[in-house]
Length: 324
Ligand SMILES: [Zn+2]
Image (cartoon, rainbow, N blue to C red):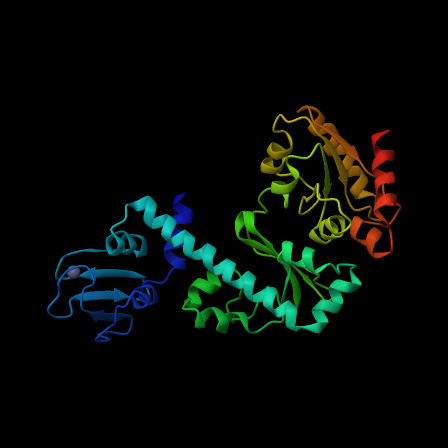
């Protein structure tokens, strides 16, 4: 963990709600930013434990202990520094996971989101479940997470809501990105901003766990493309989440295992998809990977191809052509 990450973690988990969730109660509000109460770290007779809410630090005049939230977690639970960090990070992951489950539930009760998915050709409930696709109707994630005991500052720092408390994924179909506890959203009714991501790295190839053992792998750009391919029975497909490979994704494909990789990027009007596909096939060839660019009919990405009625057999023919 870098100093910067530690700084962010220290800022993102507020001390006072953390203490309160562990049964601590302030007895007095001495100054504007400060509260005090009995020390949870020693056998305290009168309130000598102070928490500064603005600075997010604590100090006890009885036992002399003090510090930031990481120090508090160390002392409170008897953990070393690394274990305390892991505990706090685990909390962030739990919040993200609770948010994903909430959005999954919202999809089940919001017809507009279900009909949007159908319009994109995604109909198989098993795929929706497997990819944990959800829906953010907007305006209700914050209160849900607060009811679960998360503090406002924690929720804001997760990136899932903005400083005004609004869902970042507002009116978007959501896909969890488990690798980095991130999320992708596709707005269902706004033409200007269609895609939303949390400000996190994209991590590895989405779906790699299933595909890595396969002799052929199909790489597509987005999660709708991936959903279409999985629905059509291509379990060996993974999503790149964009048109560029990061180091992690390159390392996954070039793990020394013998395999054929099809690269099926979006064929935009400006031809950037096929260009990028040729570029990556050259670059990854230097690392011993055989990467075959797939050319779908002009204007089609895999999602549109299947949504427009394309069959698995037809798609397989495009793969065969790429192999020639
Ligand atoms: Zn104390």
